[in-house]
Image (tube, rainbow, N blue to C red; front, side, top):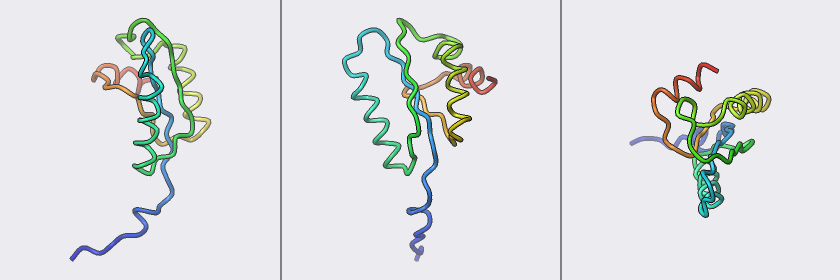
Length: 101
């Protein structure tokens, strides 16, 4: 029988910065952002900041603009975030390009 491991459930939460892109006038934008925050909470992840950007289209290479990406890097580093969580599925090339920044 597997024993209950209290430390895994009650351990310190990991820190995350969440990123969301508002394409045009998305009525569900804030609802989806709250849903992501709740999913993080349920996964024992503390959301330490939220980075959003309003664009007409996704930036193909990096999902968000280069200026916003540099801002994200600064924020995540300053807040010692363990994760950066995007509120969308990224392509392999976007993941590669973002991780190189």
